[in-house]
Image (tube, rainbow, N blue to C red):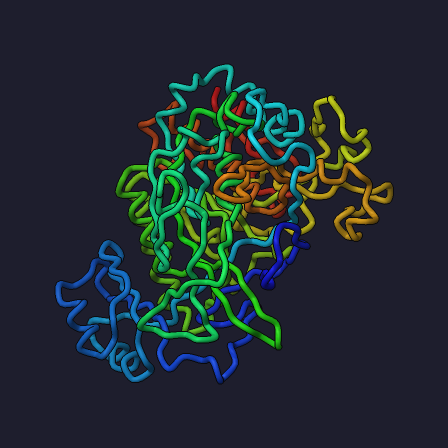
Length: 503
């Protein structure tokens, strides 16, 4: 969670969480700021909305925010009395708090040489993209022409995408915002632009006026970084994506939130159930072949309040699968065994491809800084990134970045940045970001958020080559063509391999 005034560099936080109008970490907001009304998810017994659903909800004293017809659910603003009335209605299966999902926190550092201004057309930062080469993407480029790649679209459900970034210009074919605080921005005035001038202020929460002007503007770079890994184009800027011909559908599902806890003021972004579900339904209905979700939270299967969210998530994933859309998601950055009653959402759900993150033991940090030499991670030296979740739910692994290992085999990330060698950042994932509407940039990030788009891009290449395949066939093919690199619990069926998957 970012404190007010905190800008680019962030230490890697390992906790992921889900909450309803609560502070991250599960601590409730103070009594003074706790709202009398809250946002709830109402799930009907019917898997599509009954014709009288809105009237029923309004009659109980609640106000509808989002209508999710294909999964028989609504998000509403309601007080406890209205919630109780709805829960007793024979048409309603479950009512529970609308859950909140975070961005998996990442270690971030801006590229420090010529970061700002107009990037050259030479893709001259590709030499640092060891991750792209490690999964065999250059071999795939040789056999899958850009015009064939363009048959597939990856819907990126995230903080929005900088569509005027030189590496992404022309790559985005759809611009959608399903978040609660709708606003347009950027030179093209798009709703999915990653500019946040509105926030949900939990210190002064008004359920009838969810979004209020923030005191200053922020730009969230996460979705732009993810999109660059998927499809940064050849010769556009300075980096290259796994599938430079694949198209991006940009969905802004995150809202900016503000609250005070323990005397500290926080300003961050979070995604709620309703906006995420709406985006999934829209992307699936439009026939986008792949959805990437580099976000997450946890639900407790023992908790009655989580039942509504669990049912709704199950329904929305099944809907996407029926519509032919494959969902790829980050496994989470809690460094936890995902086996058990705590479910990481959405990665642990059936039909979702769950992706853990790898780093490399190849000592890239020993290279001179700067260097003209291409950095390559040696096969056989893959390691589970120190932050990555693992367990039976993991299907595949992909480079998510780490800090490299010191001479004793310990991650440099365990030490302060000031004690790491100059080249430790080479072990992270370099991609596109936004600084402002006029300032594109590049940065190294680490996280399962960075691993997931590698898999989503390869899945898109497979769908471009085999448009007749359904999600199940693509999942099976990615697993069958993955490179075995170790424990099934850590790496799933192995490291995703673009070369093998496109043969």
